[in-house]
Every structure is written in C-alpha cells, then in structure tokens.
Image (cartoon, rainbow, N blue to C red; front, top):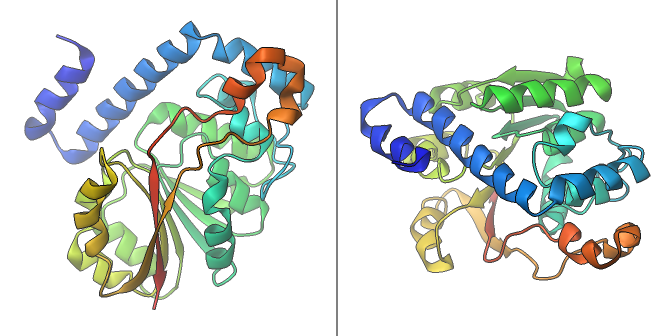
Length: 261
C-alpha cells in the first residue's frame, strides 16, 4: 500500500491536524521525487546562484531565498519573481487596506516573508514542520522574523480571533483543506476581510459549490492560471531547459478572489 493510500485511509481515524500534517509530508515527498527525476533541483541551483539567491522581479523583488528553500520545491518561478503572478493585483489591492496578512499554508514563505518585507504584520500557518523550518530560515535571512508570527494548525476559532477587530488579507493554499476550513460560520465572521484562496477541485465546475458559499458576504471572482510561462528570458542561460523551468507545472488551476463588500 502506498503512502498516499495510507494517508487517505487514516483520515477518519485521526484529528484533522494530524491528517493534514501526514498528507503534506506525502505530497511533498511525491512531488520532490518527481522534480528530482526531472533534474529540476540541479537546474534551480544554477538559477539561484546566477541570481545570488534573490527574487528578480515582481512584488517581492529583492527577497532572498535559501539553498534549503530552493531544494524544497520547484522554486525557479519564485526566483524569477512571477510565481502566481495572476493574483498579484488582487493581493496588492487588498494589502493596501490592512496592516495584517494571514497566510494559511505558508510553505517556504514566498508570500509570508514577501509581505513582511513590504512592512506587513504576518501570521503564517503551516502544519508541515519541514516547511515551518524553511520559512523561519527565509524570515531570518530577510531580516523579518520579528514581523511574522509562526503557527501550525489554523482552526476556525483561531482565524476568527485574529480578525475579530481587524480587517485582514487572508491567503489560503491548503490543498483542498479550504473545503473544511471555510464553513458558513467562519465565512460570516470574516466578511470584513479580503480572501485569496487557491482552489483544488478537479474541474472549474466542481469549484462552484465552494464559491457560492461566499456570494452573500463577499464580491467573488475567479482567476485562472495563465497558460504561458513568464520570465523565460531571465533564465536564458539554461538554454532549451529555460521554458520548462519557468513553467509552474500546473494547468487548470483557479483562485478565488473574495473582496469584502
């Protein structure tokens, strides 16, 4: 039995936080094995060294990456500075209305550390201890440790407590966990906040029931992932590998932008 099947099988038997931690480990292991087999990590290190481990463009230009962060995922789009660029306008617009950013599923810290560098107070959640360690390293290298509060499990009660007296920008990328977290009571409690949520249903049609949860409390729109890679010219030194290294390895991904009415 594979680890993926084991993770799915124990879901009814363990607390949600434990299941999510195990699922994060399995997903990261499987992804990184594939990336290693494709030579992605070796090429990413070449890019990182060429860039002096600094993000080159975009809203977090100048942010420093660590070697551990580069070897933890497909980091080249982040180093280019165009990772998930389609949501940047919504993120900047929402962040200008608040001093607080809540990042649920912070991973290596692209958004958590990035917004701390932009002067925001950040509360960053991730159930994976590996990701927590890397994000803390990223925060230290960038000199923003004092602006980030690191947490593990984000419960509805915790999120409501953080936003009870303050409008916040809430960013969520928790691999399907958004379905369980953002239930009607929580959505009503964060109706004064702006949310950017990565959606994980298999098809755009399957995302619709989740989107409808927010219709009475927020202005909702959906953003699709652009088909073309960005910043290929910045890594031209990789030759024929440049296009695939600039690509984010995703296809029909969608994001929900939910703005407070």
